Image 1 (cartoon, rainbow, N blue to C red):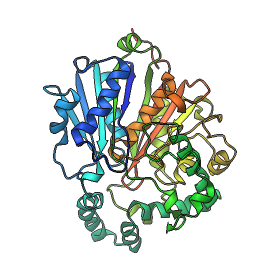
Image 2 (cartoon, helix red, strand yellow; image 1 turned 30 degrees about the vertical axis):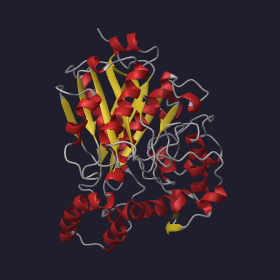
Image 3 (cartoon, helix red, strand yellow; image 1 turned 45 degrees about the horizontal axis):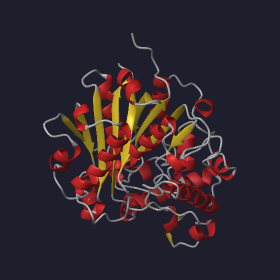
Image 4 (spheres, helix red, strand yellow; image 1 turned 135 degrees about the vertical axis):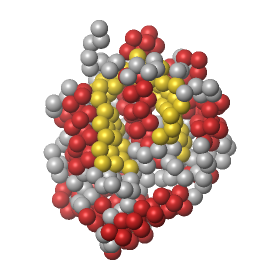
Length: 407
Protein backbone atom coordinates (compact mmCIF):
# COMPACT_ATOMS: atom_id res chain seq x y z
CA UNK A 1 0.00 0.00 0.00
CA UNK A 2 1.29 3.44 -0.94
CA UNK A 3 1.51 6.38 1.43
CA UNK A 4 -1.36 8.79 0.79
CA UNK A 5 -1.89 12.38 1.89
CA UNK A 6 -4.64 14.97 1.92
CA UNK A 7 -3.54 18.11 0.07
CA UNK A 8 -6.84 19.96 -0.26
CA UNK A 9 -10.11 20.35 1.63
CA UNK A 10 -13.01 22.46 0.48
CA UNK A 11 -16.39 23.40 1.93
CA UNK A 12 -19.53 25.20 0.88
CA UNK A 13 -21.24 27.65 3.18
CA UNK A 14 -23.72 25.75 5.37
CA UNK A 15 -27.24 26.96 6.12
CA UNK A 16 -30.64 25.44 6.89
CA UNK A 17 -31.89 26.17 3.37
CA UNK A 18 -29.54 27.00 0.51
CA UNK A 19 -32.25 28.25 -1.84
CA UNK A 20 -29.67 30.22 -3.82
CA UNK A 21 -28.15 27.07 -5.40
CA UNK A 22 -29.20 23.69 -6.72
CA UNK A 23 -27.43 20.42 -5.81
CA UNK A 24 -24.82 20.66 -8.56
CA UNK A 25 -24.04 24.29 -7.72
CA UNK A 26 -23.77 23.44 -4.02
CA UNK A 27 -21.21 20.74 -4.82
CA UNK A 28 -19.32 23.11 -7.10
CA UNK A 29 -18.70 25.47 -4.16
CA UNK A 30 -16.83 22.83 -2.13
CA UNK A 31 -14.96 21.40 -5.11
CA UNK A 32 -13.84 24.82 -6.30
CA UNK A 33 -12.80 25.71 -2.75
CA UNK A 34 -10.63 22.57 -2.60
CA UNK A 35 -9.04 23.34 -5.96
CA UNK A 36 -8.29 26.94 -5.06
CA UNK A 37 -6.73 26.04 -1.71
CA UNK A 38 -4.60 23.22 -3.16
CA UNK A 39 -3.59 24.95 -6.38
CA UNK A 40 -4.83 21.93 -8.36
CA UNK A 41 -7.34 21.83 -11.22
CA UNK A 42 -9.81 19.20 -12.47
CA UNK A 43 -7.17 18.05 -14.96
CA UNK A 44 -5.03 16.90 -12.02
CA UNK A 45 -7.71 14.54 -10.67
CA UNK A 46 -7.78 10.96 -11.99
CA UNK A 47 -11.01 9.74 -10.38
CA UNK A 48 -13.82 10.67 -7.99
CA UNK A 49 -15.68 9.11 -5.07
CA UNK A 50 -19.13 10.57 -4.46
CA UNK A 51 -21.70 10.23 -1.68
CA UNK A 52 -24.87 11.51 -0.04
CA UNK A 53 -27.70 10.05 2.03
CA UNK A 54 -29.78 7.88 -0.26
CA UNK A 55 -33.40 9.09 -0.78
CA UNK A 56 -33.08 12.30 1.27
CA UNK A 57 -33.31 14.70 -1.68
CA UNK A 58 -35.54 12.47 -3.79
CA UNK A 59 -33.01 12.68 -6.66
CA UNK A 60 -31.74 9.50 -8.27
CA UNK A 61 -28.07 9.41 -9.33
CA UNK A 62 -27.18 12.99 -8.39
CA UNK A 63 -23.57 12.20 -9.31
CA UNK A 64 -24.54 12.19 -12.99
CA UNK A 65 -26.12 15.63 -12.69
CA UNK A 66 -23.13 16.95 -10.76
CA UNK A 67 -20.34 15.40 -12.86
CA UNK A 68 -19.76 18.39 -15.21
CA UNK A 69 -19.87 20.80 -12.25
CA UNK A 70 -17.22 19.01 -10.22
CA UNK A 71 -14.82 18.18 -13.06
CA UNK A 72 -15.74 14.49 -13.15
CA UNK A 73 -17.08 14.24 -16.71
CA UNK A 74 -15.66 11.17 -18.51
CA UNK A 75 -13.68 10.15 -15.41
CA UNK A 76 -14.09 7.06 -13.19
CA UNK A 77 -16.51 7.64 -10.33
CA UNK A 78 -17.63 5.48 -7.41
CA UNK A 79 -20.79 6.33 -5.50
CA UNK A 80 -21.15 5.27 -1.86
CA UNK A 81 -23.97 5.57 0.66
CA UNK A 82 -23.52 4.22 4.20
CA UNK A 83 -26.02 6.24 6.22
CA UNK A 84 -24.58 8.83 8.58
CA UNK A 85 -21.07 7.48 7.98
CA UNK A 86 -21.35 8.24 4.24
CA UNK A 87 -18.86 11.13 4.26
CA UNK A 88 -16.32 9.16 6.28
CA UNK A 89 -16.71 6.11 4.06
CA UNK A 90 -16.35 8.22 0.91
CA UNK A 91 -13.14 9.69 2.34
CA UNK A 92 -11.79 6.24 3.19
CA UNK A 93 -12.62 5.00 -0.31
CA UNK A 94 -10.79 7.99 -1.78
CA UNK A 95 -7.77 7.04 0.31
CA UNK A 96 -7.88 3.38 -0.75
CA UNK A 97 -8.16 4.27 -4.44
CA UNK A 98 -4.79 6.00 -4.19
CA UNK A 99 -3.18 3.64 -1.68
CA UNK A 100 -3.82 0.57 -3.83
CA UNK A 101 -2.13 2.17 -6.84
CA UNK A 102 -5.21 2.39 -9.05
CA UNK A 103 -5.04 6.21 -9.26
CA UNK A 104 -2.55 8.88 -8.21
CA UNK A 105 -4.97 11.68 -7.33
CA UNK A 106 -8.59 11.21 -6.23
CA UNK A 107 -11.22 13.70 -5.12
CA UNK A 108 -13.82 12.61 -2.55
CA UNK A 109 -17.05 14.63 -2.69
CA UNK A 110 -20.11 14.48 -0.41
CA UNK A 111 -23.17 16.61 0.22
CA UNK A 112 -26.66 16.95 1.61
CA UNK A 113 -29.40 19.35 0.56
CA UNK A 114 -32.24 18.25 2.80
CA UNK A 115 -34.29 21.36 2.05
CA UNK A 116 -34.91 19.96 -1.45
CA UNK A 117 -36.60 16.83 -0.12
CA UNK A 118 -38.21 15.23 2.92
CA UNK A 119 -35.75 13.64 5.31
CA UNK A 120 -38.34 11.77 7.36
CA UNK A 121 -39.91 10.34 4.21
CA UNK A 122 -36.47 9.38 2.95
CA UNK A 123 -35.68 7.59 6.20
CA UNK A 124 -39.05 5.85 6.18
CA UNK A 125 -38.29 4.39 2.76
CA UNK A 126 -35.24 2.71 4.31
CA UNK A 127 -36.36 1.96 7.85
CA UNK A 128 -39.92 0.67 7.38
CA UNK A 129 -39.13 -2.50 5.41
CA UNK A 130 -36.17 -3.31 7.67
CA UNK A 131 -38.17 -2.54 10.79
CA UNK A 132 -40.99 -4.83 9.66
CA UNK A 133 -38.50 -7.60 8.98
CA UNK A 134 -36.93 -7.20 12.41
CA UNK A 135 -40.31 -7.10 14.17
CA UNK A 136 -41.15 -10.42 12.56
CA UNK A 137 -38.34 -12.02 14.54
CA UNK A 138 -38.05 -9.78 17.61
CA UNK A 139 -40.99 -7.44 18.23
CA UNK A 140 -40.23 -4.77 20.80
CA UNK A 141 -42.09 -1.87 22.33
CA UNK A 142 -38.78 -0.02 22.53
CA UNK A 143 -38.48 -0.34 18.75
CA UNK A 144 -41.68 1.58 18.28
CA UNK A 145 -40.74 4.14 20.90
CA UNK A 146 -37.36 4.84 19.31
CA UNK A 147 -38.75 4.88 15.77
CA UNK A 148 -41.46 7.33 16.80
CA UNK A 149 -38.85 9.74 18.09
CA UNK A 150 -36.57 9.45 15.07
CA UNK A 151 -32.86 9.71 15.72
CA UNK A 152 -33.50 11.89 18.80
CA UNK A 153 -35.75 9.18 20.23
CA UNK A 154 -32.99 6.63 19.85
CA UNK A 155 -30.36 9.08 21.10
CA UNK A 156 -32.35 9.64 24.29
CA UNK A 157 -31.91 5.95 25.19
CA UNK A 158 -28.18 6.31 24.62
CA UNK A 159 -27.97 9.59 26.55
CA UNK A 160 -29.82 8.12 29.54
CA UNK A 161 -27.46 5.17 29.64
CA UNK A 162 -24.32 7.26 29.28
CA UNK A 163 -25.39 9.89 31.80
CA UNK A 164 -26.31 7.21 34.32
CA UNK A 165 -22.89 5.56 34.05
CA UNK A 166 -20.73 8.66 33.75
CA UNK A 167 -22.56 11.08 36.01
CA UNK A 168 -23.02 13.58 33.17
CA UNK A 169 -25.79 16.08 33.86
CA UNK A 170 -27.87 18.36 31.67
CA UNK A 171 -25.42 21.10 32.59
CA UNK A 172 -22.61 19.02 31.08
CA UNK A 173 -24.67 18.61 27.91
CA UNK A 174 -25.29 22.35 27.76
CA UNK A 175 -21.61 23.11 28.40
CA UNK A 176 -20.68 20.95 25.43
CA UNK A 177 -23.09 22.83 23.15
CA UNK A 178 -21.75 26.20 24.31
CA UNK A 179 -18.14 25.11 23.71
CA UNK A 180 -18.71 23.92 20.17
CA UNK A 181 -21.07 26.64 18.97
CA UNK A 182 -18.64 29.25 20.22
CA UNK A 183 -15.94 27.40 18.26
CA UNK A 184 -18.24 27.45 15.22
CA UNK A 185 -18.35 31.25 15.47
CA UNK A 186 -14.69 31.17 14.37
CA UNK A 187 -15.49 28.96 11.35
CA UNK A 188 -16.93 30.90 8.38
CA UNK A 189 -18.39 27.71 6.84
CA UNK A 190 -20.34 26.62 9.94
CA UNK A 191 -24.12 26.78 10.24
CA UNK A 192 -24.90 27.73 13.86
CA UNK A 193 -22.31 30.34 14.84
CA UNK A 194 -23.10 31.51 18.38
CA UNK A 195 -20.26 33.37 20.10
CA UNK A 196 -22.44 34.57 22.98
CA UNK A 197 -24.38 31.37 23.72
CA UNK A 198 -24.62 30.51 27.43
CA UNK A 199 -25.40 27.37 29.42
CA UNK A 200 -28.60 29.05 30.61
CA UNK A 201 -29.69 29.65 27.01
CA UNK A 202 -29.36 25.95 26.24
CA UNK A 203 -31.02 24.86 29.49
CA UNK A 204 -34.04 27.04 28.75
CA UNK A 205 -34.85 25.24 25.48
CA UNK A 206 -37.78 22.76 25.43
CA UNK A 207 -37.32 19.13 26.42
CA UNK A 208 -37.69 16.72 23.47
CA UNK A 209 -36.99 13.30 24.98
CA UNK A 210 -35.26 13.14 28.37
CA UNK A 211 -32.48 14.07 28.89
CA UNK A 212 -32.21 15.75 25.48
CA UNK A 213 -33.52 19.28 25.02
CA UNK A 214 -33.94 21.10 21.73
CA UNK A 215 -30.71 22.96 22.45
CA UNK A 216 -28.88 19.63 22.80
CA UNK A 217 -29.47 18.65 19.17
CA UNK A 218 -27.81 19.52 15.86
CA UNK A 219 -29.31 21.59 13.05
CA UNK A 220 -30.38 20.29 9.65
CA UNK A 221 -27.90 21.83 7.22
CA UNK A 222 -27.52 22.13 3.46
CA UNK A 223 -23.86 21.83 2.52
CA UNK A 224 -21.05 19.98 0.75
CA UNK A 225 -17.41 19.00 1.23
CA UNK A 226 -14.50 17.84 -0.94
CA UNK A 227 -11.12 16.27 -0.10
CA UNK A 228 -8.21 15.70 -2.48
CA UNK A 229 -6.04 12.63 -1.86
CA UNK A 230 -2.75 12.04 -3.65
CA UNK A 231 0.50 10.10 -3.38
CA UNK A 232 3.15 11.10 -0.86
CA UNK A 233 5.54 12.01 -3.66
CA UNK A 234 3.08 14.41 -5.26
CA UNK A 235 1.84 15.72 -1.91
CA UNK A 236 5.27 17.09 -0.98
CA UNK A 237 5.27 19.16 -4.17
CA UNK A 238 1.72 20.44 -3.73
CA UNK A 239 1.53 21.20 -0.03
CA UNK A 240 4.10 22.43 2.48
CA UNK A 241 2.65 20.26 5.26
CA UNK A 242 0.34 17.51 3.93
CA UNK A 243 -1.89 15.44 6.20
CA UNK A 244 -0.95 11.79 5.68
CA UNK A 245 -3.49 9.02 6.18
CA UNK A 246 -1.97 6.73 8.82
CA UNK A 247 -4.80 4.32 9.49
CA UNK A 248 -8.51 3.73 8.94
CA UNK A 249 -11.04 1.40 10.51
CA UNK A 250 -14.75 0.64 10.31
CA UNK A 251 -17.10 -1.51 12.37
CA UNK A 252 -20.76 -2.39 12.92
CA UNK A 253 -22.59 -4.08 15.78
CA UNK A 254 -26.16 -4.56 14.49
CA UNK A 255 -27.22 -5.92 11.10
CA UNK A 256 -29.68 -3.26 9.98
CA UNK A 257 -30.53 0.44 10.25
CA UNK A 258 -33.21 0.03 12.87
CA UNK A 259 -33.75 1.35 16.40
CA UNK A 260 -33.96 -2.19 17.84
CA UNK A 261 -30.34 -1.83 18.88
CA UNK A 262 -31.52 0.56 21.56
CA UNK A 263 -33.55 -2.28 23.06
CA UNK A 264 -31.24 -5.28 22.63
CA UNK A 265 -27.86 -3.75 23.45
CA UNK A 266 -26.58 -0.88 25.58
CA UNK A 267 -26.46 1.95 23.02
CA UNK A 268 -23.68 3.71 24.92
CA UNK A 269 -21.36 0.68 25.04
CA UNK A 270 -20.24 1.13 21.39
CA UNK A 271 -18.10 -1.93 20.74
CA UNK A 272 -18.04 -1.02 17.03
CA UNK A 273 -16.27 2.25 17.80
CA UNK A 274 -13.76 0.58 20.10
CA UNK A 275 -12.90 -1.98 17.43
CA UNK A 276 -12.74 0.54 14.57
CA UNK A 277 -10.46 2.74 16.65
CA UNK A 278 -8.29 -0.24 17.64
CA UNK A 279 -7.80 -1.22 13.97
CA UNK A 280 -7.10 2.35 12.85
CA UNK A 281 -4.59 2.91 15.66
CA UNK A 282 -2.81 -0.36 14.91
CA UNK A 283 -2.38 0.62 11.26
CA UNK A 284 -1.15 4.04 12.37
CA UNK A 285 1.35 2.58 14.83
CA UNK A 286 -0.37 4.27 17.78
CA UNK A 287 -0.21 2.39 21.05
CA UNK A 288 -1.37 5.09 23.48
CA UNK A 289 -3.93 7.42 21.86
CA UNK A 290 -4.27 9.48 25.04
CA UNK A 291 -0.66 10.60 24.66
CA UNK A 292 -0.17 10.34 20.89
CA UNK A 293 -3.32 12.05 19.55
CA UNK A 294 -3.11 15.85 19.47
CA UNK A 295 -6.56 16.68 18.14
CA UNK A 296 -9.93 14.99 17.52
CA UNK A 297 -12.95 15.64 15.31
CA UNK A 298 -15.89 13.68 16.71
CA UNK A 299 -19.33 13.14 15.16
CA UNK A 300 -21.67 14.46 17.88
CA UNK A 301 -25.11 15.58 16.69
CA UNK A 302 -26.36 15.10 20.25
CA UNK A 303 -24.82 16.86 23.23
CA UNK A 304 -23.75 13.79 25.23
CA UNK A 305 -21.90 12.19 22.33
CA UNK A 306 -18.59 14.05 22.26
CA UNK A 307 -17.98 12.98 25.85
CA UNK A 308 -19.08 9.40 25.14
CA UNK A 309 -17.26 8.87 21.82
CA UNK A 310 -14.03 10.42 23.15
CA UNK A 311 -13.95 7.63 25.73
CA UNK A 312 -14.74 4.91 23.16
CA UNK A 313 -11.93 6.27 20.97
CA UNK A 314 -9.54 5.75 23.86
CA UNK A 315 -8.84 9.43 24.43
CA UNK A 316 -10.07 9.37 28.04
CA UNK A 317 -10.82 6.70 30.62
CA UNK A 318 -14.34 5.31 30.78
CA UNK A 319 -16.80 7.83 32.29
CA UNK A 320 -14.18 10.60 32.38
CA UNK A 321 -15.58 12.56 29.43
CA UNK A 322 -17.68 14.92 31.57
CA UNK A 323 -14.71 15.88 33.75
CA UNK A 324 -12.48 16.38 30.68
CA UNK A 325 -15.09 18.75 29.27
CA UNK A 326 -15.68 20.65 32.51
CA UNK A 327 -11.95 21.06 33.22
CA UNK A 328 -11.37 22.65 29.80
CA UNK A 329 -9.15 19.91 28.41
CA UNK A 330 -11.24 19.70 25.22
CA UNK A 331 -11.39 23.45 24.61
CA UNK A 332 -9.66 24.89 21.55
CA UNK A 333 -6.68 25.80 23.78
CA UNK A 334 -6.85 22.66 25.93
CA UNK A 335 -4.37 19.79 26.01
CA UNK A 336 -6.66 17.69 23.76
CA UNK A 337 -8.86 20.02 21.67
CA UNK A 338 -11.98 18.41 20.22
CA UNK A 339 -14.14 19.89 17.46
CA UNK A 340 -12.52 23.29 17.12
CA UNK A 341 -14.55 23.49 13.90
CA UNK A 342 -17.80 23.62 15.86
CA UNK A 343 -18.61 19.96 15.32
CA UNK A 344 -21.83 18.35 14.18
CA UNK A 345 -23.81 20.06 16.95
CA UNK A 346 -23.23 23.24 14.91
CA UNK A 347 -23.32 21.93 11.31
CA UNK A 348 -24.92 18.75 9.94
CA UNK A 349 -25.19 18.24 6.18
CA UNK A 350 -25.57 14.53 6.85
CA UNK A 351 -23.98 12.99 3.74
CA UNK A 352 -20.95 15.28 4.11
CA UNK A 353 -20.75 15.42 7.90
CA UNK A 354 -18.35 12.53 8.56
CA UNK A 355 -16.11 13.74 5.71
CA UNK A 356 -15.96 17.18 7.27
CA UNK A 357 -14.53 15.57 10.40
CA UNK A 358 -11.64 14.14 8.32
CA UNK A 359 -11.11 17.38 6.43
CA UNK A 360 -11.13 19.56 9.54
CA UNK A 361 -8.59 17.27 11.20
CA UNK A 362 -6.41 17.59 8.10
CA UNK A 363 -6.61 21.39 8.27
CA UNK A 364 -5.26 21.32 11.82
CA UNK A 365 -2.21 19.32 10.70
CA UNK A 366 -1.72 21.53 7.65
CA UNK A 367 -2.03 24.67 9.79
CA UNK A 368 -4.80 26.00 7.56
CA UNK A 369 -7.80 26.11 9.90
CA UNK A 370 -7.82 29.90 10.10
CA UNK A 371 -9.43 31.42 13.18
CA UNK A 372 -10.25 28.00 14.63
CA UNK A 373 -6.67 26.71 14.32
CA UNK A 374 -5.65 25.29 17.69
CA UNK A 375 -2.62 27.05 19.25
CA UNK A 376 -0.47 23.95 19.70
CA UNK A 377 1.28 22.06 16.90
CA UNK A 378 -0.84 19.16 15.68
CA UNK A 379 1.00 16.05 14.49
CA UNK A 380 -1.61 13.31 14.85
CA UNK A 381 -5.39 13.44 14.74
CA UNK A 382 -8.34 11.09 14.94
CA UNK A 383 -11.71 11.68 13.25
CA UNK A 384 -14.87 9.67 13.69
CA UNK A 385 -18.31 9.17 12.19
CA UNK A 386 -21.38 7.12 13.03
CA UNK A 387 -24.44 6.02 11.09
CA UNK A 388 -27.63 4.02 11.36
CA UNK A 389 -28.72 4.31 14.95
CA UNK A 390 -25.15 4.48 16.29
CA UNK A 391 -24.18 0.96 15.18
CA UNK A 392 -22.03 1.89 12.15
CA UNK A 393 -18.71 3.56 12.91
CA UNK A 394 -15.71 4.74 10.87
CA UNK A 395 -12.41 6.07 12.25
CA UNK A 396 -9.54 7.81 10.43
CA UNK A 397 -6.11 8.68 11.82
CA UNK A 398 -4.01 11.38 10.13
CA UNK A 399 -0.43 12.49 10.72
CA UNK A 400 2.13 15.06 9.69
CA UNK A 401 4.50 12.30 8.50
CA UNK A 402 3.76 9.07 6.61
CA UNK A 403 3.60 5.79 8.50
CA UNK A 404 5.98 3.87 6.25
CA UNK A 405 9.05 4.84 4.23
CA UNK A 406 8.46 3.90 0.62
CA UNK A 407 11.16 2.21 -1.43
